[in-house]
Image 1 (cartoon, rainbow over the protein chains, first blue to last red):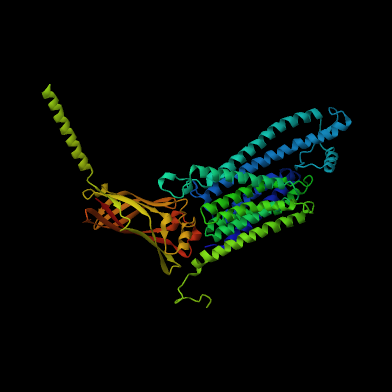
Image 2: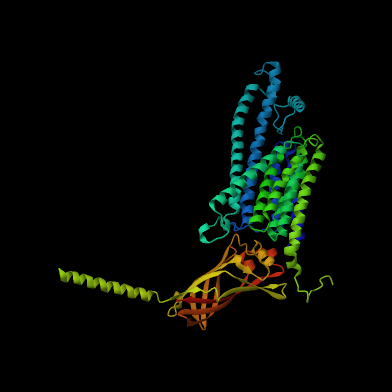
Amino acid sequence: MPDPISYLKAAIAAVVASAMIVLALRLILRKRAPSIAAVVCVLAVGVGVVTGYGVLQFSWTWPPANALDRFLMIVLPATLAVELLAAVSGRARLLPSRERQLGRSIALPSGHADREPVRTETEISGARFHRAEHVKNVLHVRKTTVISAPVLSVRILTNSATNRAGSLCAFGFRLALYASVGRILLHDSVYLGDVGSGNPDAWTFAKTLAVFAGSFAGLIGVWSLLCRLSERPAAGSITVSLALVIQCTGLATMMAGYIKGGAAAIPLAAALAGTTLASPLLAKGAVGSDKTYLRGTISIGVIGLFSLLVIGHYFGQLTGLRAIVLFLTPLLCWISELPGLRLRPEWQNSGVRFIAVTIVLSAVFFSAKQDFDRKMAPLLVGVSSHATRIQLSS
Amino acid sequence: MIRRNFTTCLMSLVVTLSLCGAGRLAVASDDYAYDLVHSSVSFKARHLDISWIHGRFNEVEGKFSLDRQDPTKSAFQLTIKADSVDTANAARDEHLRQPDYFDTKQFPTIEFKSTSVKAIEGGYEVTGDFTMHGKTKEVTLTLMGGKEHTFKDVKRVAFSTELKLKRSDFGFDKNAIGPIGDEAIIIIDCEGMRK
């Protein structure tokens, strides 16, 4: 039976744990915190998720026997590791480019790049670099360390090579994970059994290939579109929308009869929400309106959502249509980029996204509730013949 | 030359006959196939600790070999298709197939394979590995019966047993052990047949 109290406890624990991690690292790292915001966010989601599942008392036994265990013990840790690697290499990648721009802007006007003293500040973070802020930063960094242009050039070249390798490595791992997540979740299931052994659920080679290729394409598509959108203002609304979709997936899975599979969505959604809500603390001191540090959080959300849908559909009774609609719902955040909505303030963009996502989620929820009332509810209250009908209300 | 060939042939015949005899002795046990028509695997579990819910598995396969002279050489094997669970309520059956209960897409079968057999009064005590929900545990079944009957050239033998087990021992979700009790009783009535 569902236990709403423990679900609430798990959600609160996950939100508080992830927010506390953000807050603690912000206090400990102080000015350095914005430069590693992406790393902090991934760590916060990880801690929140582990705390939430701990409160729900999910078992962690190796080797994982079922799809949910494989999600918790293989897919989720692998995603966190890949996103941590991507965040670390991404953060490092930003610094030389910033240094490069600083160097160029100071050296070129004077025409004496080799002699002009160039200053840098490693605390600077963020991806996009606005001209006005750039000039402000150049003036600011003049007060700090002095590095000559040749030294800076060497540093840029060595760092670029190392960081590019790190980024490529992270991207490669991410691709590998996206390609294999479906296979991992369906491991040892009837779907991947031998077709000739009289197993009616076994997929043919062509169907297996189509399902995995489609999953890979879908994952890459949704992930890249959401990451692209995160470069626009109000990136936090994307992760909160993802959290809402994950939560709705959990409810739909539960109403379809798979209680534990639905409960697994709660800590993940809560950790994403907690991290996003606390993340403005990290943005303080960050350069410009940069919000790309939420990319890792978005990736974890996309993989988590996909995994929960696969588990709910292939092992539970979540319908295929509902699973597809739920998986594509976060893309509705792009609605804020429509002409007429695009240049509105950040809070209006967030509001438009939430409204669009909530409308679809409400439709999915009520349709799932109707199915629940028709199929599952009679199992709880009982069914009697007309002659012996029990008046439950009396 | 002819005499030598004759001796060789005679010796070959003797060896062949000896081997055949030994083979016949080695196959002293009778092999039986599970008769799906005259057998059943059913179960019952407590509801709210006040009543029993009954159900059965409609698709079962199995075989056993019975050695009356040396029962330790007997062997029993049973494979239940978890997907065939039937509690006379389609919605409940769908629910039971989900991962909170039998997780039939992940664990399509429930299996028993004997590891040792001992004769007892009125039947056999069979110890073996019982695998359900991906977990294997050693259980001991007390098979009562074993009477033989030949009907229309088909030799039949039958056994009955009950097995009490805790679902929590087999990795069932604790939240699914609430209104439906942890302990379940599996009732096996098995008729084997051989021509």
